[in-house]
Length: 324
Image (cartoon, rainbow, N blue to C red; front, side):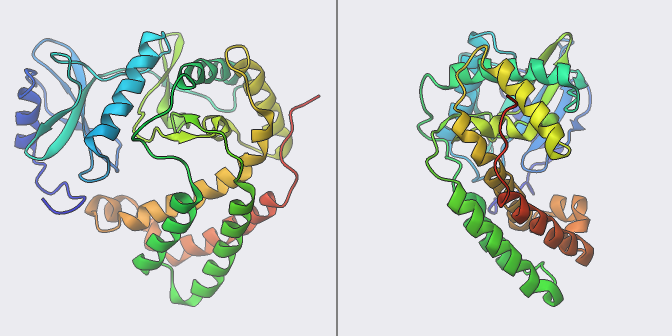
């Protein structure tokens, strides 16, 4: 199997892998929206619906994946709503023909509305409950949110990809370097805890009357604000109101370090740059070329120059503060 490749992950291999843990698919495999891993929903002969996730080869070690699973089990034990892996004979991580995989119950629901203050209030309490558990101990094997990975390594992946058009290459990397410099200056004195790590609207569901976390694939060590700031949207005044709602609800369950508010814009910059670097790194995967066609379009890179200029301006503004 070549590095990072899913080329050998055929439908027959997927079904064989599922059957190796004693689960037998009755329906076909429905591919779900995932690019980093390969994820499929199916109905088994027991009448239940499952989701199977095959981890991208060589991305995580077995120890790192097991920590993700164990964190989910801890949250579930503390009655924090999360879709945790299914255990078979006390085991959650399995291997078949070189591919690591896990099974989950299939959970339906409606999307979380990030611009709804009532839902943000519920979300703040949920993240507070998650962090109450997360603070009890650190990860041993999972990585930490760092400038090296999110800024400098991401830039290297962009440079190696040669996807930035030659005509705007200088303009792009000039503004990129300015944003990297400012973000690195501001991202310091960081107190880290275990995080969801990718806490955005796509990883949160209303299941019945409760919000539920899904997909801890990007869980890692980092500042608590990392799991909160992606809930913010709109202009500065709107974000202040959203932030006030989130933090007040969060503090019902977990203390919040208000000094971390200054990390919001550097973290936003890190996410922008890391995302570009992630797609560039995965560009050899046909699924990325097929689903991210705009990434090779000149117009995209022109828009990114503007986005980076806006982010540089945001980094130079005073940090958000809670309402008095």
